[in-house]
Image (cartoon, rainbow, N blue to C red; front, side):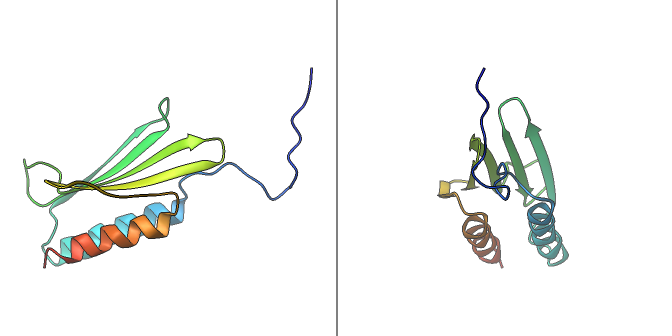
Length: 110
């Protein structure tokens, strides 16, 4: 039986951090205080390695924005932003890039 030895003690599996979650939630709270967004929902499918943070502009409407976090490998995570009526507007392996695009899209509501 062979053993896999990481070449760095600092290497670790990728994933979605608590700080990133708080950043997405703060974005919703800011937009909600300005009456741009009405509600949000968080869904996780641990078997598929997918989580989504969905933003709504009004009750009983289709999602306005969806931020999808997808584990695509042992050390790789993809972030995608979907906008109602336009589909996916960005797909990136860098959280900050996808987050900034989502922020710009939400700011465009005002």
